[in-house]
Every structure is written in C-alpha cells, then in structure tokens.
Length: 199
Image 1 (tube, rainbow, N blue to C red):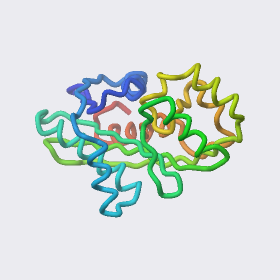
Image 2: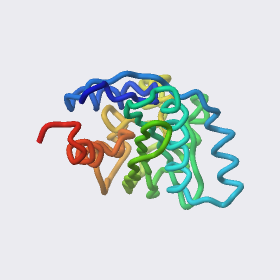
Image 3: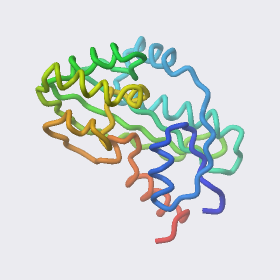
Image 4: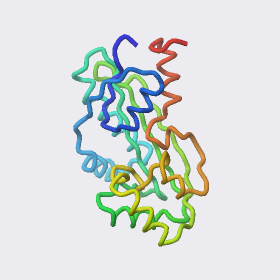
C-alpha cells in the first residue's frame, strides 16, 4: 500500500490482526459517543446489522475527513440477543449479569467494517457469527470472572474467544476473525482487488 491503512479504532486486537496479515497500520481512534449514537439508532428501529454498519461508517467517515487520500477503516461490533443489543460491561457485576443471560442460549455477533476515502465510504461488510453458550455452573462463572476481569471489560458479551472465553461455548458457526471484531478475509480480498495488496 502507498500509505498505511488508517484504523479508526483503539482496539489492540484489530490492530494485531491487521499487522499479522502484513499490513502497515496507523491508528487514529474516532472520538464518538457510541452509547448515545447506538441509542438514537435503536429509537429509529434500525436492525442490529444496520446499527453495526452505521457506527462503523460514522467512525471511518469522521477520521477520513482529515486524512485526504488515505484509506480509513472504521469498525463496530454488536451482540444481538434475540433482537436486543448487549453492550460492553462497565463493571464485573454487569459482566456476570450478561453471561447469566447468555447461558444456554444462542446469540449473534455482528462485526461491521467500512472503508472511507476522502470522507466517503467505498467499501463495507458486516460479518455475522452465531454462538451458543454452554450451561456453565455459577461456581465456574465466578472463577472465570475472577481470572478474567478487568481484561474482558472492553468486550461485547464479556468474553474473548482468543483466550479463556472460548470455554463458554458449545457451538460457534461462522468466521473466527469476525468474532474478534473484524471481517478480515473480506477486507483483505477488497484491498487485493483494488491493487493495494500484491496478489
């Protein structure tokens, strides 16, 4: 790529995924009030898929307006539990309550990615994964939270699939990278087709 890909996210996981794939990255987190924007979009009865997409676009657009001809990647992840969005837990008590609600149930995790150029979207994709949480015991949950808080504080659903959080699940249907917050294969395919990455 002529210039580093600008990542409009402070997520260390997304940065690592992109760098491990051989991309040069410049991180410029988008400063937006995600909670307020998500609530506004929910009040308009938008689907969880469209909410993830809209938030990713807002982040990419905001940063792209100041980056000229550089590609800017915005991302967002939404957990859909039967049409309800679960957010990142703010406290260990919120994490426990989320995981108890997820126990024994299946939910969708949607990871949206939007690339902007000169302030306008030129590519977008929303990946969806279905995850079934096993019927873990209360005692196991307490130990899980003791070992993993506050590391999971910034994680939708109170888990990291790349660490002990994988033990929460009995079934996962979909792309691993999408669970981590980035539909990486689709992104790399787009950059290759554009000629930004050698084929």
